[in-house]
Image 1 (cartoon, protein in one colour):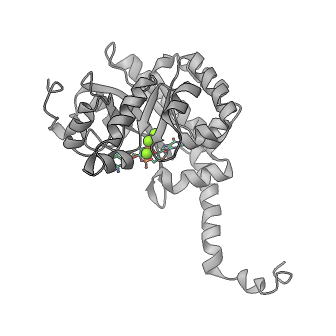
Image 2: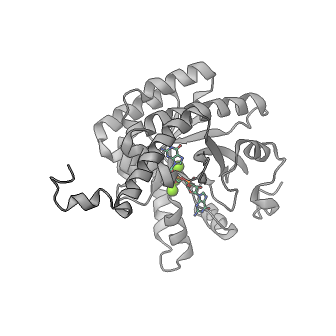
Length: 295
Ligand code: C2E
Ligand code: MG
Ligand code: MG
Ligand code: MG
């Protein structure tokens, strides 16, 4: 085959060219194994309610504790998993683990303190015909209150095949699961469209987008309009990537309902996340914003 490609004969032995592909193939096989051997872990990052002054949700964020490479972030393997289809078994594991943890919090925390647990779904997971059934089965098997599960999809996932998105979201909505449009502001779909066509409950503003507008005095008018418009079409607004107290205060003034970001708390392993929920570990590193949140 190398000969048929002519100059390609050299390419067969070109380490520089082949190494990334081999490394990728290796990573693919390792990920297949990682699901079985317990190397995947969910971290949880609080979604803080500015109205209630407490944690309302926990977003599950996938980590791979790789034996050679250490802790890997989703950006380092989710795109590969998406391309190879491995995201389907990986995503099933994520949903199962998130539902199990959500149920443990539901049972273990005082009445009303259980957070909604948010799971991110990528395109292939969302389009997988077994998704709705899998979610229904997990809710049945764990006994989890469906209102404690939120599913996050980005606008590009939602817009990929609008008719099938509408059908899938309607079935999930009918089960009582909450739906979030994630990373809003990075694409170009309209809030009116998202709010009217899709059965979404929450709009999550992308972190980079939020910071860009809050920190740039040249752009003071765009974010307020966006938040008001989201409210007008019945969507509650979560701002992600909130890194400073000033950003939180500004978002509160703008009527944003929820904030998420390093200022509140970073993503943490399940044990530390539980400590946040029980108050054993402080939010805001013990330095909360002034105002009605201070106990
Ligand atoms: P996302 O859903 O938008 O998640 C928010 C990302 O922002 C997380 O990155 C989080 O660690 C990071 N972040 C949180 N607070 C701050 C902040 O204050 N400042 C900044 N600069 N960043 C902040 P992470 O954990 O690396 O996840 C990246 C993306 O990977 C997620 O973006 C999500 O799209 C995807 N992802 C995560 N877990 C899963 C999963 O289980 N399945 C799938 N399909 N995708 C996942
Ligand atoms: Mg998300
Ligand atoms: Mg997001
Ligand atoms: Mg984001």
